[in-house]
Image 1 (spheres, rainbow, N blue to C red):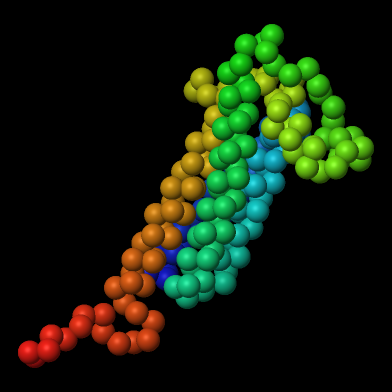
Image 2 (cartoon, rainbow, N blue to C red):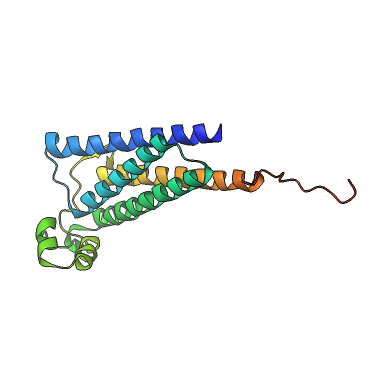
Length: 183
């Protein structure tokens, strides 16, 4: 029962991630919103998360494999959460404090080392602080942050639940309840 539950949860997380990727592609190509560097990093984290969840739902691993898949999805969600949180902070800055560089990401990777590019992206650019789309008064970045936090909570809960189940039922097949010496 536990494995079927994890497999279906991985599939539902995959569906949620695929829908979020679909919405982001729709907003970019159909609506015409241009993603900034931090948006692309979030999309990359989302794509890896979605791929991990699809792989886990198709693979259907045992308890240890489930824990590893949930931890891997937790890492992807955590990276997306940090990136989205940084962009929300950049969007909350006043316009005069926003960074002025707006170099394209491909040009930055071609001319500078990747570690410098990562530092410059998290420092922010003018287009990272701009809010160009909202739904229910939340920006696209805030929706991304909510999604990543929800997936992070799911991954932490499932990982802890599976570890707890493993603690109660050892893999060796012996009983987890020790017999008393007087029995």
